[in-house]
Every structure is written in structure tokens, then in C-alpha cells.
Length: 505
Image (cartoon, rainbow, N blue to C red; front, side, top):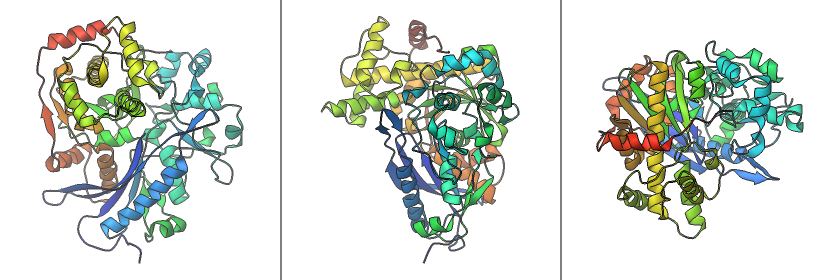
């Protein structure tokens, strides 16, 4: 017999599908604000996300990911003893799938690290100067933004045959429910949304010949996105009805919901493959100075704006680990971090946002080459390279948080690190030292927590605004606090010697 949402007692289970750049997982959360409040999260299924290169193009293996989602939903029902009260989906941003008139997928989605967008920014700038584009969309320059992907795909057979474009979380939701929509927090990363109106920027689309009718209607976090199709119920062993709820489908939007802050004087760093460092604001910052500093205005839950800078993040260390393993010298991360902690700090650093680090490949060599080009002392061996990476990330976090305060006029007194990097004690400590501010680390599963909380609020299991949801987090989760130590002048000198200029087209 399939699991039913009406069976059992206690707080209702909610399933969070959380797809990251290296793995996907399905989590089951139980949420209630009755009494002292309940907030529990359990991973029930994890599966790899392995991009595949075919005929020179790097793709996401989207069918494998969808199979992992189905397996995870089956595990969610078995674990909870009932069907989820709701399912929410969050993933990375900018990438999309194209469907033909029958709803069939026109090829695997192209990976944002593919090289097809090289040179597209210059072509777009010839039509829409960067300052005009930023004033209209508020999005930072990244060479793989959806806008550049679409201009690069123009004239190709897939885009020519397409009748619908769905961003990755919306594509998964479409396969689960048969209903198409475009969730706004992820749509805001396309560089086709006006952050003031929270609607499409038709002047931008028209100037570049982008057909906005390809996109399904916009929907927001908390909106109903449909119910599981009969074939999905049969595949997962769940019973009807099982609703799918739109959440902050950009995983950073969900992660920021789960920043356990009190008040608004906080900065956040959502860490993982990328570091997203910035502030939560009520309105976008669309000044020329903001554009020059390469800050983005992505939309968040409850009408908020995620004012942040994308930083290369732990991708640098992940690629180093992959390289060392391929060379036959695999490194245990826990031991490597202990050894890196014993390396004298700030011996060498790099610009973590150097485009040279974007593609997969021999990261240790690229890091040492970058240090040499800057005239620094090149790190030797895994421990020194790891310390260089973490010092560089801490400097990048500091730079982003200081710039965000200056550009927005918002002053902060605490930095929250959420996501996978909250496990990395050395990164948290170095960020506190670099910023000269206390760092509160956790939760590590921030995107899944935010996903579940938005679902639970939509279902009536909890109420209130973001402050209430964050209070529930603070009351039920264990968090770790790092106070700044050491000589701040050392970080000032390191920041000055890096001399990083923000890259822009």
C-alpha cells in the first residue's frame, strides 16, 4: 500500500529536493511551531551529479538527476511512513531545458561551465551597453548568465524548435506534475527580470531578440505548482494527492531563508561550490558604482532582494582534491584542513574570482601560476595550496561584505556562514578574522531548511514572516560562533596587496 499524506500523527513531513552542482539529495523535514517548536531534517537519499561532455559540449545529465529525485521521493515516503504533505525543489541557477510542442526535452541542458558563451558579453554590449543592462536588471556580470546562453544558442536547431524554456527546478517540477511555471527567485538570475517590478524586462528581451513567450508564467515561493502525476505516484509508491509547492527554487534563495539571524544587521555567506556573500535588502541597488563592483540583485522570498557577489567558492578546493586524486596522491580533507591550519597565514593569496579558475582542470597548477604572476611566493604541496585557497576565500568574503555595506548603506555586526562551508572550521575562523566580525556558522543544510520552511508555511504548519521562521531555526538548531582573533592589520595589508579589480565586460 502506498504512503498517504493523511496517515500518521505529529508534525507533517515535507520533502525537499535539493540539487547542487556536485550532488543531489532528498530530505524529509518535520516542522511545527506548536509549543517550543519542531524543526527536524533527515537526508533520505543522496545521488551524484556528474556532468557529461559529448561532442565538445558539457551537459548536465538531467535524466539521471530526475531518476535520483524519484528514488528520493520513494525513500521519503518509506522513511516518513506517509506521503509528504508537500514537495519543494531547489537547484542551482541560470541553466535550462528546452521542450518542443509536445513537451519533449530537446537534448540535455548545457552546463554553465561550458565554453559556448565565450565572447557573448561583448556581442550583447554592442546592443545594450553594460550600464544600461545593469540599470534594467541589476544582475552582476557572469559570463554564463542565461541571457548570454540564449544569445549563444540563437540560430541553433534546439532553440529554433523550442516552444517552452524551463529553468532546472521548473523542469523537474514539470516532469513531476505536468504543469509549467517559472519561479521568480531563479528567474531573477536570467538577467531578464526587472528587480523593481519583479517581472520580465521586456525592453531588454526585445533589444536582444529573446522571445519571452518561451517562459512559462511566473510564480513565487509558496505558490502551488501542481500535484504529482499518476505515473509519478506509481513510480514512487506515493498516493494521491501529493502537492508540489514552489519554494525559493534558486538554492541560495532557500539558503538565505535559513540564515538564523536576529534583526537585519547581518551579512551572509552561502557556501558550497560557490560562495554567495552579501546582504538581504528591501530594494535593489542599481547604481553605476554597484555595477562596477559586480554586485547582483537577485530576488528572494517575501519580496526581499539578495544583494550579493558570486565568489568562486570551495570549487577551488574541490578541484584541487580531484586533481590530486587523479595524480595518485589523494588527500583526506579532514587531515588536509588540520595541516593547512598549521601553515602560517597569508603567505600567498589569489583573486578567487579570476576567470582562470572557472573551468574544470588542474587547479593546483593554476593557483600556483596565479600567485607567481602576482609576484607572490608560490605555495608548495597540498597543505600550503589549501591554506592559500582558504585565505583567498576569506579575503574575498571580506571584500564582498565591506563593499555591500558601502554600496547599500546597510551596516552589519554579524556574518552568518551557511551551507557546506559551515563545516569548515578553518574557513569560518579565517572569515571572522578577515572581516573583523563574529561569524555564526550553520546550518549546513541551509537550502533544504529554507525549502522546507517555505513549504510548511504555505501548508499552515508554521506562520509568520522571515523573522519568525529564523527564530524557529535559532531555537532548535545548534550553531557555532567564531570571534575574530589576531591582528586585523595583517588582513588589511593582505587585502591591499591583492589589489583585486572587479572584472566586468
